[in-house]
Image (cartoon, rainbow, N blue to C red; front, side, top):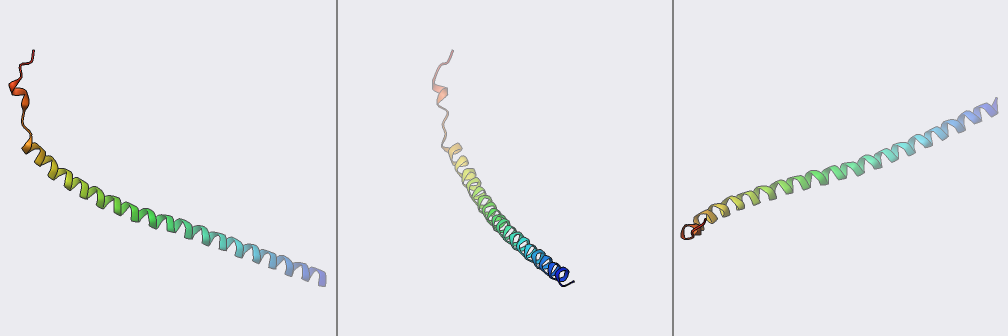
Length: 79
């Protein structure tokens, strides 16, 4: 009887150790992917802001380019 109780105790302690290690591994994995998610969202906001800045800059430069452009083909005779 003592042997059976001892085996049950060892079996339960082994399960508890395995369960805590699984939980620890899951916590580390969740933390890793959470950090990746936060970095991805941060990068997305930075890229969106950069895209808006570049599109505003391109809109203003394209209107300036259109005003400065002269059509030089008027003086040439093409066949």
